Amino acid sequence: MANAKANARRFRGVVMPTASHPAIRRVRRQGHVPGIHGNKLWKSSALLIDYLHRQRPEHCQRVLDVGCGWGISGIWCAKQLGSSVTSVDADPAVFPFLDATAELNGVATRHRVARFEKITGRELAGYDMLIAADICFWDELARPVGNLINRALRAGVKHIVVADPERQPFLDMAQGCVERHCAELLPWQCRGSIEARGALLVIENA
Ligand SMILES: C[S@@+](CC[C@H](N)C(=O)[O-])C[C@H]1O[C@@H](n2cnc3c(N)ncnc32)[C@H](O)[C@@H]1O
Image (cartoon, rainbow, N blue to C red; front, side, top):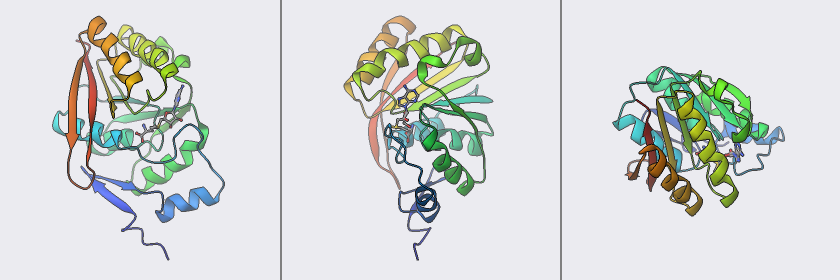
C-alpha cells in the first residue's frame, strides 16, 4: 500500500503531495487528466510561498490564484493567512487535484474555470492580492498575462506576486511591468524540503 507520508512534503506549513500520493492517485484513477501542464505542483509555487512566508502581505483577505493548477499557493494563503481564495485555471481537470490537496491541508478554495484573458476588471476589483506561479511558459502567454496584470492594477488590486523559474516569456512580460508599473523583479531561492530558484515579479499598487 502506498505510504501517504512518504509521498508528501511539508513546506512552510503546508502539505505538498507528490504525484504518487494515495489521494492524488485516487483522483487520477477517476480519469482526470490535466492538459496544459497542470499535472503536478510546480516548484515556482514553493518560491511564491517562501516569499509570502518571509514578507507577510498586508492586503491578503481576498486572494486570486491564477493558473492555479493543484492550487498549493492559494491553499497556503487560506491556511496560513486566513485568506478567502479563488483558484482560477483554464483547465477544469486540475480542480479534483486541487480539492485533494486542499483536503490534505484542511482548507478549501473557490474554483473558477477561466482563461487569463476572460478575467475582467470588474471581477478583479473584488480581490486584494493576485498570485501566480509558473503561468508564463509559452511565448503566446506573455501578452495575456501582462494584460491581466494591467487590468488588475487598474481594478485596484493592491498586491501582485508572480513566481517563475525565469523562462524567457516571463522575463519579457516582467520587463514590461518594471517599465510601466515600477514592478520589482527579485531573484529568489528557497531551501528546505523543497529547493528552488527563480524570480518573483512583485507589484505594490499603493
Ligand atoms: C505550469 S502550471 C503551474 C500550476 C501551479 N501554479 C503551480 O505552480 O503548481 C500552469 C497552469 O496554468 C494553467 N494555464 C495555462 N494557460 C492558461 C490560460 N490561458 N488561462 C488560465 N490558466 C492557464 C494550466 O492549466 C496550468 O494549470
